[in-house]
Length: 339
Image (cartoon, rainbow, N blue to C red):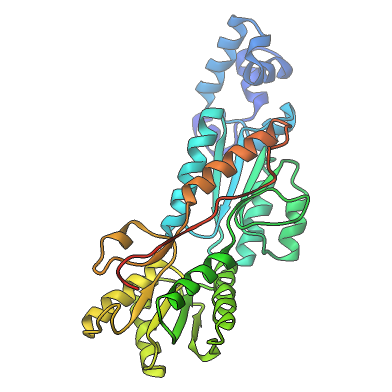
């Protein structure tokens, strides 16, 4: 095997760089990690050798050597959901100017994948960690407990003294939308949900509480499915509800994708919205304001959650305490024409 092919097949080490630069291993390490502590000539010599060999420092080794890391791990359940895309973009706008890079992991709402991602990312010794929600397996909690850097949780709130979080009460938001539908005169209000993550189940509990308050709760009016959420599924769920419960006069969907699908199906069925059937969603995605009739929904500030969570993590990584351990960004009912 030629030297070039062997070099590409094997990992180039710092020792290789030092040998090529004609200096000690310690000098090469210092030239790359603390360039201000070596001469310009040595720094240039080592940088040229590293570039020639294609040397890439291993993040965990670099963090261990310097006791610092510029990596932040971010674990979210989905990237097909624009809610989390908005959140990640806001995090990046905070972290990048501060010199941090993100490792983004998608758990796809699976506990096993959540564990695998946490275990893999913590091997890189990240400076901090941003995770979504508090509910996870015992194994994942144990892994998080071993994290040397601070951890900030997004999308949910906690009263625990050792938690740092930015989010809002999913339960309160679910209850608020249900109460708004009741206040508008709807009596037989169904709740439909897919992809049953903890936040969806908290919204469902909010729905139940509000319905019980007005002595209108009927468990058969709940339609919960673990299927992946989509516009087409929203249409399908509406079909199922109308077949099983033709008396319903409103449906509260756990997200806007489902609600938009139901709106499209109602038009196909010539169901007048909201005169015959009111439809409400959750998240206030951009399309919600532009469909006809415009969708009643719950506005969530996912970009602000990402921004504030990123800023809180930066504060903690500096060894400082944030002004608040738990930030409630709240939510807003957007009552449009569909309900």
